[in-house]
Image 1 (tube, rainbow, N blue to C red):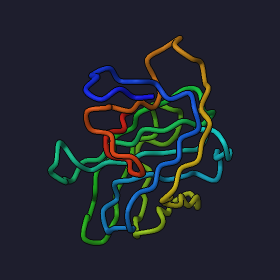
Image 2 (cartoon, helix red, strand yellow):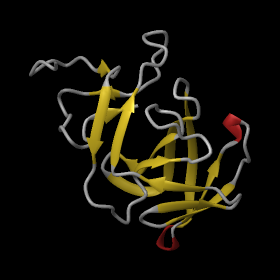
Image 3 (cartoon, rainbow, N blue to C red):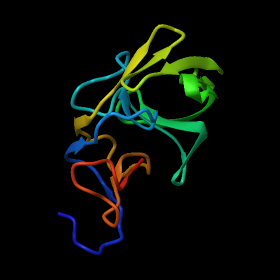
Image 4 (cartoon, helix red, strand yellow):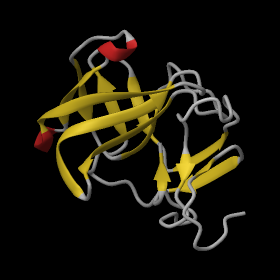
Length: 154
């Protein structure tokens, strides 16, 4: 278990059940891509943030995994935040450089027809590659709040 006061980040290799609050109008959160999602793994999972620190902005960062083992990071930017439209550069993983997307509280719809779903509960068993590399999902015991994504890191 986690010892109170420890500062070490722990890599998850156990069942994680995380619940986030009510859906918001903020794009930040946990999403799944049906083209890659495999229940019980990190495959097809995506975390998105448009915040730098605690300040929401125009730029966004996506972190995800297609296979549940290797994680990637992509960058994007809102083209019209009030309308929920944005572009993401998928070229680092072999996709288009400026894929357009539209955000609603529950979905992200991409110009290629794919639709990602926001998830409020994550149930995953991630074994992955173990300690072979630094990539993965971590809990920061100084900030982790059980039942939320607070204090989680990728």
